[in-house]
Amino acid sequence: MIQAGVRALRRGAGLLWLARARSQPSTGAGALDACPLAISGLSVSYGEKPAIFSVDVEFPSGSLIAIVGPNGAGKSTLLKAALGIIPKLSGRVEVFGKSIDDARGNVAYVPQRASVDWDFPARVIDVVMMGLYRTMALFALFGSAERQRAMACLERVGMADFADRQIGQLSGGQQQRVFLARALAQDADLYLLDEPLAGVDAATERAIMDVLKGLREEGRTVVCVHHDLATVRDYFDQIVFVNVRKIASGPVEDVFTDENLQKTYGGRLAATHIDKLRVAAE
Image (cartoon, rainbow, N blue to C red; front, top):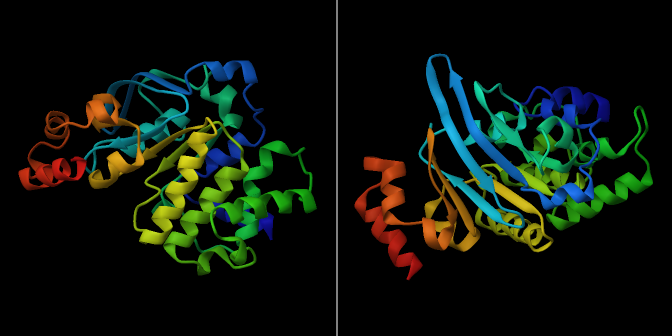
């Protein structure tokens, strides 16, 4: 059952990266003093059109960080290129001072839910245990210890009662919680999530943010592609504005300004929307 689920999961964009991460060891403790994710001069092109161009940004340790920008700005591309899921034209990426190939075992990635093929025969518990692959010997079988750990992760996201349910039978918000539980099972120090709150209900949004804030309190670094500007101040302490290029980055209290919003969104962001954001901050 699990093996069949793995084959099907690999059809989802970005999930091949999980399989590649399986054999990579966790980053040594001493390396965790380095920047969790440092990107320098990163450029990616789809055909002749640049998706992101010469992006330089560092993501500080122990922070909850939002990457924001308009549709087509390159937010998801930035994450995928940093992880090596898609090729880059140029640039350098370091994770805790190492290349991504040497540090995969210390990174957990949650792709966009819409990019995954949900038509496969895997139970919820099977999907979560896939996050344990890198801690197991090659060809080893899952046992009671792995199941207990997976159940603890499901409990943390409020999905323990659905452990034996087929993943394709869940609602979108429930599926998102399961993928977050799989990431938790990896016990990483850097979590990268591509629009984890897109299309989920209010209860799921609160549950996901409670988990992400808990990770930050544990000293982990959490980076999210995010689309709802109205919740940035409540949910995040750092922000990166992207529109093909990096527009600005830093603490939300310093960088989440009218000027940077206009530079990033231009005419797409109506003045009335900015006024609402300003009122929410007061």
